[in-house]
Amino acid sequence: MDNSREIIIMVDDDITNLNVARNNLAGNYKVLTAPSGEKLFHLLDRINPALILLDIEMPDMDGYEVISKLKENIRTAQIPVIFLTSKIDPDSEFKGFSMGAVDYITKPFSRDLLMKRIDLHILMEKQKKELQKNNLNLESEISEKERTVIELQNTILKAMSELVESRDDVTGGHIERTQYCLSLLFDLLIEHGVYTAELELLDKNLLVMSSQLHDVGKISIKDDILMKPGKLTHADTIEMNRHTLYGVNIISRIARSTTQSDFLKYAEILAGSHHERWNGMGYPLGLKGNEIPLQGRLMALVDAYDAMTNDRPYKDAISHMESIEIIRYEKGRHFDPRIAEVFLEHEQEFALESNRLLTFMTY
Image 1 (cartoon, rainbow, N blue to C red):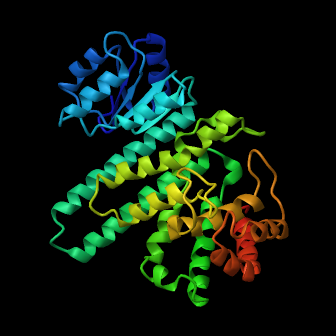
Image 2 (cartoon, rainbow, N blue to C red):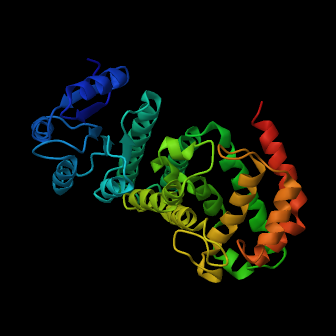
Image 3 (tube, rainbow, N blue to C red):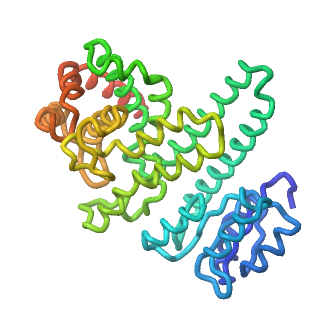
């Protein structure tokens, strides 16, 4: 066995599931299997894995009991745990995340999706350990450490945002376009003297950088909902709307692992508030008017504009002019009226750059 490969432990009482997971992952990782929670803890006495894939429904000790015991032990508490289970109800997913799981994948699983998620979480764990190591020497070589932290932050952001976009090829480029529009809107508001005092308290670079994570919660939305080619059912819509709460949860867990978390504070605000509406009819909290953080009000407009003017699994794109009419109508309803007014005054600038980015990414 190649000693350079990371170790993953798969825990499941079904021998068929163990064999399938081992065969899918063996080319990239050392895969050890355990048919029960008790056997897992015997392995952990002598092995420190990079990640644990854990079934929920097992006799004697179920997955929830296993992860609870893992988190109680300082030696195993930091091992990333992904639930790999046939339980598909939202309450089970939420319970898993609440107990400290880093991800939740339902069976039967796609090999490529499973591999991508494992790669992401192992990368994140490596970056977290690197950050912690760097923080021990924070008092020396300050400028070098700051550069390293920024590079690590960008690596995490890029990996996570690429994972979100990989779930649905149709929405590729959404992150780049919304980043550009957010930056342009920020500058235009200052130019027009709109919310100047509030904007000057924000770090524009951190805001734009962290906007890559505004939809990170979609990692937790199942494919049959996220990529559904038609209208969502009421239950589907409720689950889709939870991506905001899932995003906040994911980002807050990352933030707890590092002292260098200013950009993650921005990301958490954006993830949780970019679907709130000025009239209070948005989600997840139904905030109204200035109760909505300014960052969320900015993101709400650029996110909606990009969604309208680009294809999605459930709808075709509409023209720039049609989207502008909708934004004009929704000013003071969906969107902050002052922000929408500046956007509408400069709508051609947003159209030109969005088209340039779209054209560039098709070649």
